[in-house]
Length: 311
Image 1 (cartoon, rainbow, N blue to C red):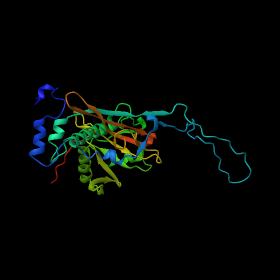
Image 2 (image 1 turned 90 degrees about the vertical axis):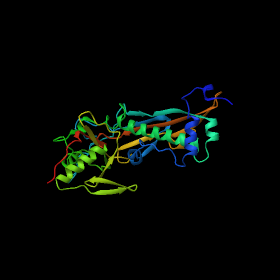
Image 3 (image 1 turned 180 degrees about the vertical axis):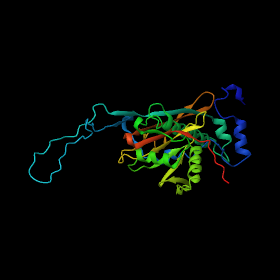
Image 4 (image 1 turned 90 degrees about the horizontal axis):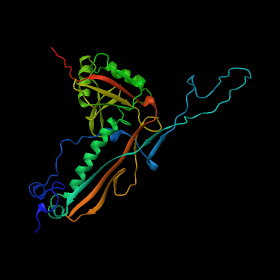
């Protein structure tokens, strides 16, 4: 009988841990860091051919009007001639990938997969980690993350630090064409709830996907703990319009890849080495695109630490 020290340690689940899962309980492993990841659910996703998504835009003239038109009330004036011109250098989004190699010892998966399928659970938890990283990158990636692609004209600061109904109204002014949802850290949403309640306008709630969300002006505030809070207790709140037809924000992915378990996410068997360790390549191809500057706005300098005394 071979021993564990005959193959590289720390590369796969240990037999002792697998026995605990198989024999001591019939519940799957619980991981407290898994979140609902509402952003992924609420974004419309576009399948990208060739790994590149090009955003073509109409070229704006100095007057701001791209097409020459004439309103005629009487007579026979000479009509203008026109055409729609496009930008010569459209923005291109290239899909990024999140990858890891999952190692499982065949002895572990063979012997300790009675109550719980060891390989299935290893894959499930690895996929959860990939999805958590994806949500973080959708928001914070330096090139395409939503926090970082907001145009300067679409960025404002709170009036007094705390997120008030007035501040959210200012965001709505910037994304007034079919705004879909606010996106904020749960602590920022709680701070807004305190400020709205103090002003006598407690925000109503709406139920989405079986969960309650508070709203403002009918727009839900969607929580994500991937929005950063700095050392001073400050964060940002986003307001998004979504969808291709609305010239909003869309998620990008590549569907139909080998080993796909859901669109854009694959688990591919890579083989078993001389130490009886089976390897699976876990890959997620993704990005996010902004189809118009007015599709997103950001409220900065949002303080989460203000509380009120009620007497």
